[in-house]
Length: 326
Image (cartoon, rainbow, N blue to C red; front, side, top):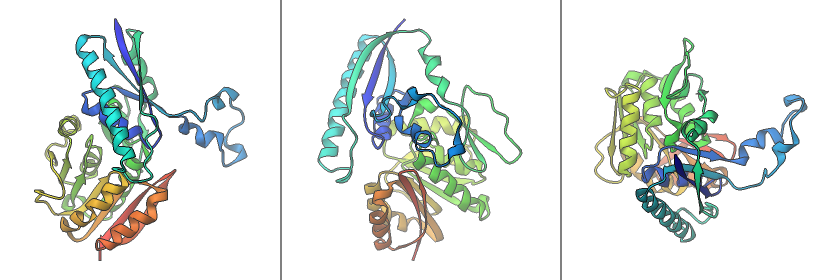
């Protein structure tokens, strides 16, 4: 059987944006080839980190990331490919117009289309996805992999093909680590959590697996809401998590002890004043999706909105900011 292979050339900053566009178009089987994943190896901190590696690993280490997806070869798919190309053109136009901030750079966003004769591609793309321990307690497990949890671990089951929010990206893992820290510092069953821009629902589900019973995920993308609902059912936490279409700035009647927002830095700054209105006394606001170069700007904006910064956690080129109401 023949398939259409889409390769979208982007930047590391643009990987999640491109993945979200594909998700919005109903494509949930996505893989990412990011040469930056080799940084820790090629820029080793200690001489004893390895004894030997093949020089071929250095080849094309500076190439741009590629987001890859597959479609059945059909007339309907031709229309979807055309729509995706249009969406990439529009995304590039928004980037150039400054919609995502003056420093946003999502790369070329060019789309390469080829026909692939490979009946096994659906299984082959999964080979790189294995169970990953993201926090001290949470292990993210692809649906097709087996994993036996240790006594102190909880398993969050998700299909990495759903792309936007799988736990492996630094911004998501930072949020998960901070959620775990602040949930387990109190009585989880009494902690209300609001996940703003919930995407795949991974953060809301994480909160439920850590013991929270009252969690709301809001998302302005209707397709993402449906994906989040599926993941909630998959993880058997529907009694604790509600995911719905919604905009924090209007129509959300929910006050939380923890608000988490894994978004672009400009959206974090825009939503901070609204977050303040949805916080219980002593609540914390966890935000990520923030490049370290934007850290001070975002922290200043959050402070101006009525918060005080509690801590900032960094991973690679990304950071997460924890704040409380003044």
